[in-house]
Amino acid sequence: MTSDRQLVAALSDEIDRVMASLVRGGERVALVNFPNHANAGDPALWLGELASLARVGAKVVYRASWASYRRDELAHALGHDGTILLHGGGNFGDLYPHNQATTREQVLADFPRHRTIQLPQSLWFREPANRDRLRRLCEAHADFTLLVREAQSLSLARAHFAVPTLLCPDMVFALGSRARAALPVVDVLWLARGDVETTGYAPPPGGEVQVIDWLDDVSDEPAWPLRDRAALRLNRRLHLASPAMARRVLALTFAPLARRWVERGCLLLSRGRVVVTDRLHGHILSILQDIPHVVLDNSYGKLRSMFDTFTRESVTAHWADSPDEALAQARALVRP
Image 1 (cartoon, rainbow, N blue to C red):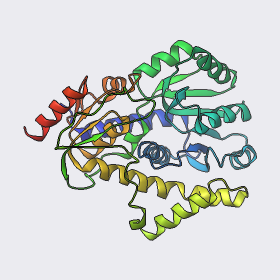
Image 2: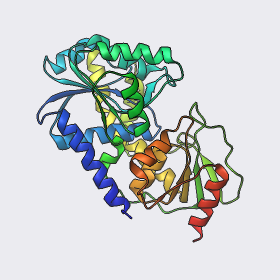
Image 3: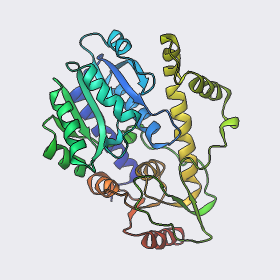
């Protein structure tokens, strides 16, 4: 069986291979749709994207969130021959008809001829009409490439989108392995999502189980290092700012805040001797930290597909088909 460090290194190498096939060393790129929130998974993706781009030698000349994106500023920064990169994740579909998805569509419409790459996403559509509307926008683009991060999404993309499509591991793997952020304080940490992707289960009760989600505990901000607190204050003040200079300053806050939010997520996962989760990046960040964990699916099969495509060889990851099975496996991992 492959160790988790070997698995993460192999997946990181595969990410770099895919990126190097698409982005030349020294190429000017724009990275759009910074996830300006404390959910650890999306900021981890942003940092992984930056890490891989640095290794392949790309030059990131423009960074924007959905709120700070401006067509003229991106055009000025990128010139005529650069590449637009759209932040990856799990919003390529109609489950999240929010700002990031809207910005993706706006960028495709604003730059119909600029080379544009959607970084690895999971695809899911509840309504075929929504899928077909986005399909038409992608297919009308002169140079659009779609990266997907697991086999289910690859099948959906190739069935419904007539655009170049490649399989690429989730960008968080580009961060590489890391030490466990802290010593455990509970037997089982259950990271349970409560949004549109939940299957609606209730975590089993048990004194040894602490149930939490990414954003349940955000009380640590006053203890952040001064530089990170300053970045957070600037970010909140400038998030919707109008002057171009303010947006350039805002972009400088993205990486430090992403690092702090990822660290918070890793500390949360480290509370458990064993983690149970139906969050994809709870699974991936547990692998990066070598934390034993049990994986449950989300509402549309994203975690099962990721597990089957890339992570089933993990030493620390164990699949469960129900909350009761997950608790039984977690207890067995706590007390072998």
